[in-house]
Length: 453
Image (cartoon, rainbow, N blue to C red; front, side, top):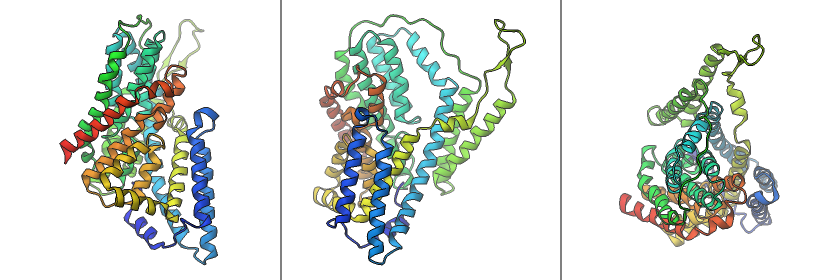
């Protein structure tokens, strides 16, 4: 989404090169130090938003001080305003999507799906493929983090006495969720960035369906042979009921997606305004649920007591959004934007896309996203604005989306599952399968070459 034509024009007008100045070197060191703390989040238990928020502020303080010292109080002000405006579009888009996902979680939609899978009595191999395919199919609509957490809950429930199955199942889910998110504008933040930038149309992303599927299927074909034989013990209990309106909220979410796409394709307005319109659908329906709540009397309690189990509040679901993630995006976008103002992105772009060429550069972007989060990597690419055709933009969208699967720390899904399946799914258990995941990475690129050249 990130740099509009006006923003690029403004940044192009800034000719100050601070890459070798103490201001630029200090800013780069601040960013690197902050990102080391982000990578160590699971070990030091410091939320990833905190270091990047501080880094963003310090970097722009340094820029503003230097620009004021040379008598330019306009350029930095205008650049940071445009970068912040671009961030707000992403912020409100994600906030609406997260609110819908939280609403479906509160209504028990995903709990019912989890319980249904657990009670079917599938074998380990069937569950491996089923959770993988569901992760691949759900992540284009729900984000890959939520999808991975839901599917891993199934793996953990049925594999409580089979840590080997849990480890392999979680690796498969991470790969599948990241691959599924790569061919949909709604599946990953990086695809959302490219779509909202107007670089690729909504339907163009579906050209990555088969490459993304190859990225998922190739490592899964190898991993299935390491699964334990047999089936887990049956787990009793009833399927969690879906609260009133749960399925209709899912339909309203789809209607919101259609609205966002229509705002861009037919009205030529930013899709975030379509998402905000879709939030109104949910708020009106929440009013309907509250107004028509049915009181259920529990006969085991005092006959005069009653409870309303359909009480639903949109604002409570907004409050449950991933605020740490949203503030992390703010810090990263402002920090990387500052490095771009200083001139580092121009130098990087000249080396990657000038010396290596776009194909090798875009493959390298995917490999880099296994170590560094794909959000700043993709934002940096968009900020560089290299001259690429549709095939190359699809390639970098694919590699940035699935490259994080190479390591467990390379994606939000992998980091979250290491916490949820602590001691069973670890960095080393994922690293064991990195070679076959790399084969899937190469296979996805090759299929993209065959299908979309």
